[in-house]
Length: 252
Image (cartoon, rainbow, N blue to C red; front, top):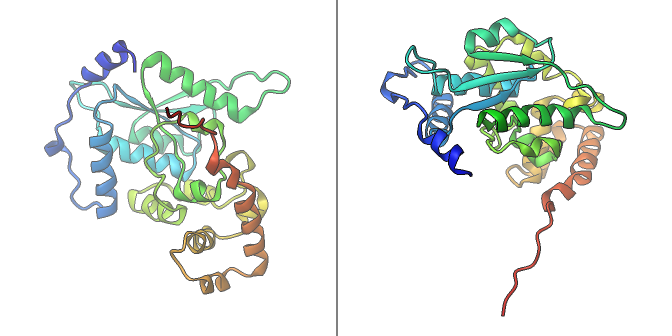
């Protein structure tokens, strides 16, 4: 971190935790809000890329509960959608500050996903903001996250399974239209048609078996075809667990 960034973060407005009302909110949401309030306190601000899906919607809602805008301080949280058609834009705008930026013009051979992340990363560098990623534990374990998304350094949902994210979204009041979109095919977000045909809850059962949190007998609920498909995705993506390669330790 350079000295200018450190100075900017040190000057970030203090949040009065006692003024934030979490009464009546599910205890799991409160735990996430408290963690965000503490862990992101040094940040000058945080940029949440908004896809219009459930993961980024939940994070945006949580961060705005942790750092609500006040008359005496600018909003610490900004949601950015690359494009001009953000799903449920009105809801996002009731939650916090939303900014729409133009899609980058792609040259031959350029990848849209890479350029989207490059766009928000550029904004973060320019405005000295932390870049928030919406990766869940499900994506982490299954390896369906993109390498471009690795530029994000703040991952609030990385320990939470997708099925739990959906439940928390419902408790937070995320619109049903957004929740439904997470069950439809979206190849750009790592969810091809074959994946979308398997219920999110079953994908998490598969992963919990792989992670030795459930017995192998739990896979009986999925069916042979689903298990075979998910096992193929899991194995294809295992290389991500060992990257980047790190050099050896040098000893005398």
